[in-house]
Image (tube, rainbow, N blue to C red; front, side, top):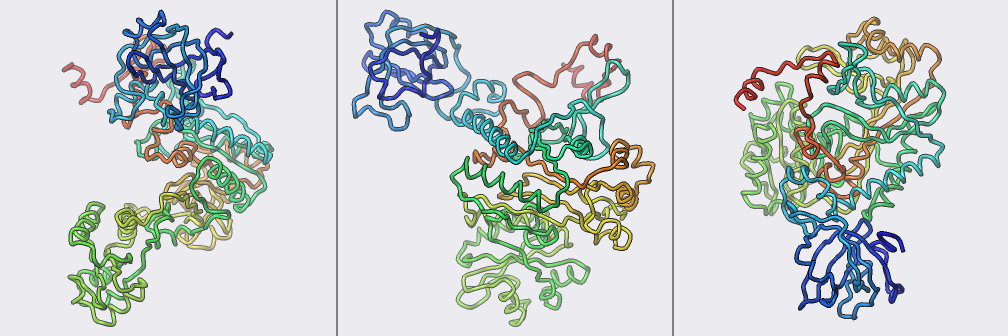
Length: 598
C-alpha cells in the first residue's frame, strides 16, 4: 500500500465496502457521539467521514488533536446506515472505520475557521492566505480558474492558434498606466519595465509571420484596486491574428466565450452573434461604454420638451447648451416618498444637483415639477418614455457629458433597487465604433480617445479629409453584465497612416520614431493587416464563480494597497542590494518623519 494513501478523500463509494484503505488529509471537523469520534477528513478532492472507536490504542491521542492537523488513517470501508447517509457528500454512503493513525502535520490553534463560513477581516484572510485557500468556496474558485485556462488552451489550439511567450523584462512605455520598473545591475542608472501587456511583442510576432498567437499573459500595472481590478498584476488571454477583419476576431471570441460560459456555468447565456452597440449610441442610451444589458432601463433625450417649458431650472440648462435626460421606470407610482428621496440623494452623491421625477397615477401626473409643464409637454414626455399608468420618469439636467455619466449611475442604481436585473443570465455585447480622437477638456487640444495604435476606419482618406472628432476607429470592447472583459482593435500597421494619426494628436514624426521606433521599423519592412484582443482571465473567472470581488478568484492577491500581507511585500531591501544596483532611496518628507517617530 502507498505510504500515504490508497484513495483520496472524494473517491470512496459503496462499492468499496469491505476494502482496507489508507487516506490522508486535514481534520475538517471533529464530533464526539458518546465516546465514538467522527472526523470529517478533507483533502483537495473531497471529504470522507472517519470513525474512531474508543477501543483503538490511538484514541487517547485525540485530546491533543486540533482541526486542520494533517492525519493519515488506515481502516475498513463501512456502509452507513440509511438514516446516516449524507447526500451532500460524494462519499456520503460510506465511512472509514479507522484501525491505524499517523499524524503527518500537527496544527497550532488556527486564526479563523476553515470548515464553516464566518466573517473574517480581509487583512487576516490575506495574511494567512494558505489557510483561507482551504475553504471550500475559494478552493473551488481556484480549481475553476485552472479548468477555465485549460479549456481556453484546448479551444484555441483547436482553432490553429499557437501559444508563444513574450518577455517579462522589457522597455518602459510612455502610454497607459504607470510601469513597474526594475533596475539594471549591468547598466547603472537604467531600468527595465514589467510589461503592462505584451502589446508590441504580439504585433511583432504577426510581422514575423506567425499567424495566430495566444498567451495566458501576466501583466503588470501600478494602478489602484477596484472590485473588478487587481492592483499590481493580472492575467489576460492575449490574442492576435493576421490577415483578418474585425468580424473574424468577433467570431473567434464569441465561439470561445459561449463555450466557456456554457461549460462552467448553469446560467443562461446569449447565443452568438452578440449584440453590437456603437460607442456613441451606448453613451446616449446607457450613459456607459460597458452597459449591463440585464437592466432594461435606458435614457431618452427630453431636452426639446423642457426647452420651452416654464421649468426654468431645466430650460436654462438647455439654453446654455446642456441637456435633459429622462429615465422611464415601470410601476413606481406607489413607491414611498423615501424611495424617491433616496434616489435624489444617490444622484447627488454621483455629481448631480438633483433628480426631478414625475409619476402618473390614475391618469394624472404627480410631481413637484408637473405644474411647470403644459398638458402637451406632459403628453410628449409620456410618449417619449412609453409611459403607462403607474409608471414614472426621472430627469437629469446638466452639461451633456455630466448628464450621461450621472444618468448611467442612476440607471444602475434603479435597476438594483427595483430588482430589474436577472441574476441568472449572462448578457454579452460588443461596443464598437469608438471615436479615434477627442478634445482635451482642459487644453482644447485634439488627443487620442482610446488606443492610439488602432486603424482609423477610413484609413488615410479619413485622416486627411474628415474632422478629427468625426473619425471612428476599428476599436471594440467585449462587455458581460456591465463588466468590461477586454478591449481590442484592428491595428494600424501602415507607417504613413500612423504618422498622420499621431500628427493630428500633436506628436511629431520624431516623437513617434523615438517612442515607438521598434514598431515603426518593423512596419516599414512588410507588416500584414492584423488585430487582436485580450480578455481578462481574472474577470472571466470572477463572473463564472459569481464572485463580486476579483481577489476571490486569485490564489495570492494583493490587498487594496497593493501589498502582499502573507509574504510582506513590498519590503525594504538591504543597503548592499541597493549599492549593487547603484540606487539610493530618498524618502518623501512626510514618510521620513513617520519613520523617525518609530
